[in-house]
Length: 539
Ligand code: DGJ
Image (cartoon, rainbow, N blue to C red; front, side):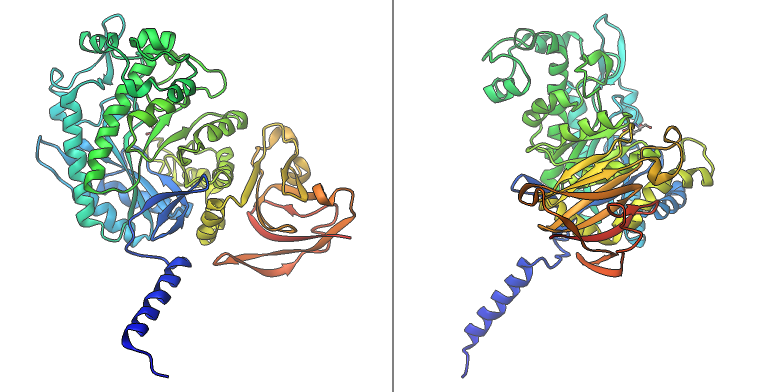
């Protein structure tokens, strides 16, 4: 039988479409964030990608710092480097731009086979203007800081000043235009706009110009029942900031103007080159609902997320920087930033051993990335050995996760991963898995040392493959199962527990552990992250 040319062409096109549908990487596709059934994924080369990140110290984005930084990136086994680019470096004189450091970063990242998240240190860095170019710092009248309630100058740029915003928009647009021209391989996968914006030392700008705005009616975009309910205030459909928001009005005013400013910077950048953009947050206490005098006011703290979402729709997400200690607070923060309207990303976590475990929580929450801060030890004057020691808890997890990152990202996007991390009381925890409940214990029975002396560093994630089959990944814990739901009361056993690895998302066994390793309830995962597949059976 002979086929006409057009039928053959159609068959080729249909076949091509099928290959794409089933997830072949598309090298030309721009990075983007997608949502499906309430889950988010960051697509890199067209497939879900999880950033096993590492953030450089604040002043490492200079050529002389790169060798030390790359050696830390290698030691930690990150797949993504988060690194600042500085407005003062890029526009040293008004209107004169120098993008050479961007070239350096992209070229070197490609040589090291990692992606980049660029951090635009511009109008705000930790609430101050310290990375603005000199020509702006010298012109305080044109680019003013905020004024405190008692009329004192505060070391924080004013969010209501159009000249500052226009200058930032101009520079950031040029950066994004340059990236579009240069980064044809999409080495840069996200951009952070500013760094921990807001103000320390004053809840808002109290300058006469700001006061005029404060006394005007609240913008109508904020006066919708949904936003007002989310902000926990009664629905008032008009009024000044003070009338509508009462004792929170100063903070909400500041949040609105900071978010509007940054939203416009991000929108202008996206008009040049629309890759994912986010802001990071200096957190407030997530449990006690403190007032903004105790934290950086106006940044995307958990209580003002609804304001940021309305004021800055160009941002893909608001991200928490985790420097709080204690699992109760950290887990609360993760819950607060994992929202239907906000993909979860932790761009900074303190470089302390206990924090490595939160990687598991972020993956299980469907997050898109996680990163400790300050991997190159450059600020703290630590020796290389001391720095390596600090990187080790993260490196161990990244060594496990890097080769299986695409599978983890896909399962995370599909909502198939659950996790627990050890709390400071080392108490056992459970994970519900339908017809089974996993019971995970931690502590001295695993670590063989006194409870007081040990870190709370146990962690486990479970990928549910089918009703009775699970992939278990973790360390410093002991797992057993209980039949529940339709299995309740039934006798059961492990059909087998296998140890192995994942090859493109498919588990490959290296050995079966049905002896001492799984007696007394189930497997114990030791000091190195291990990948097991457990198949359970009711009798
Ligand atoms: C959070 C900031 O975002 C970082 O740039 C850095 O200043 C750390 N805090 C603390 O070193």
